[in-house]
Length: 77
Image 1 (cartoon, rainbow, N blue to C red):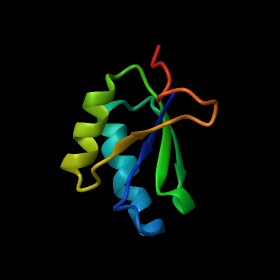
Image 2: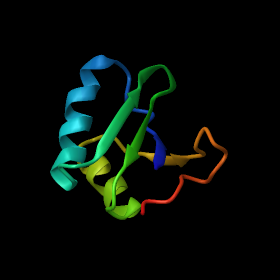
Image 3: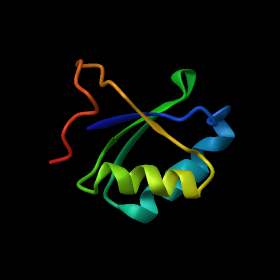
Image 4: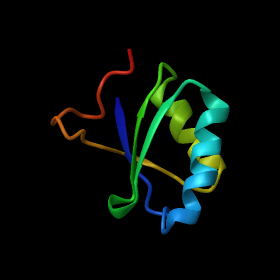
């Protein structure tokens, strides 16, 4: 699991384009949007750099945030 901070995620209207962008990369991706923290938790087998790239392309640059479990973004395996 990866947790990403998305500073541009200002309101619930941002959820749809973020979810769409992520799903174009991996239709099986598990996505949990956390609006009050401007972050998203995802589970995917795709490389984190690809995830960050697709979010930037959609206008929502993201930065890795430590997982709730204390990891550094978690494993994607």
